Length: 351
Image 1: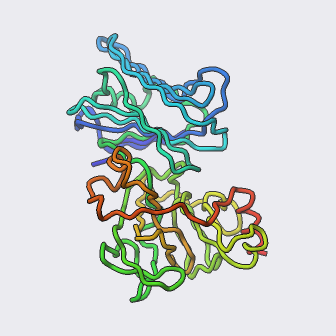
Image 2: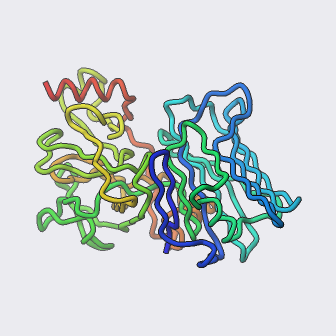
Image 3: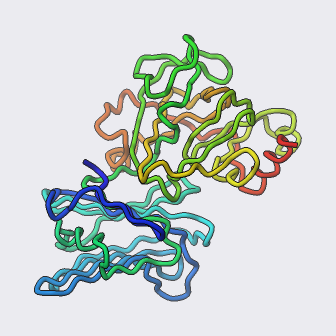
């Protein structure tokens, strides 16, 4: 099991009952556009009365901060996280995770436009119980969601943080034996880079996520960007674009273009939901080489120097892997385009 419930402003999906499964650990994941506020503003608030009252609140505070309060019958757990002032156009992913076996809990914040993860331990003894979580996601619950919320999801495991996969499992990847779905590639297989170099696959990572917010699938249409077939990917995937127009406009050989900046243009469309969950995969290569995906140059999984950061590595999808087998990736020499520049470049190529 993993995801137990997903709530969005338009829909709700429930896959299992936390009161019945009573998982020993879990995560509450919230994606929201961060409001610019001069006073504390609730992003999420839940109250349950009765003989065992329970209260959970997530608040945005002035200056780019977040506070979490979890209260049961007078006992209190709390946490505060400071992050940079994001602005309303930036999306925050906030993950509150707990483990009843160890008694530990953490609050983590990630921004859609940055690689950094901010993690803080949650002080205090209160951790959500199965019946409280069931009440939180039940129809008619006393649950208040902020107007900028994109989705709320409940999981029965500690959800990973940091680098995430972004390719649909059927994405064709160029290899010395021709194009193969990324789902078929394993450690030790080889792939062709955009320069036709042969490099080994160190690991293939995969994750199932709510198909909303920054995880909502998009479709990049062929023949844009050299595609032979349409490409179904997550908005966070970077395309690698090169050519004389790139050198003229940006003074560099290649640029990285986040696909989310292209949504709504002629090349890239929101993919209609085929269900509330989406599965993504990605390949970890020795030198952060560029993949050929259905004819387009796309970035492989970037992990930076994650293997040197024990806490962040243990919180990631790569947790449990031998650190000696993980590469270190230097910062890409290719600049990441902002939304306006990405659209200008895409429009020039579509003309």
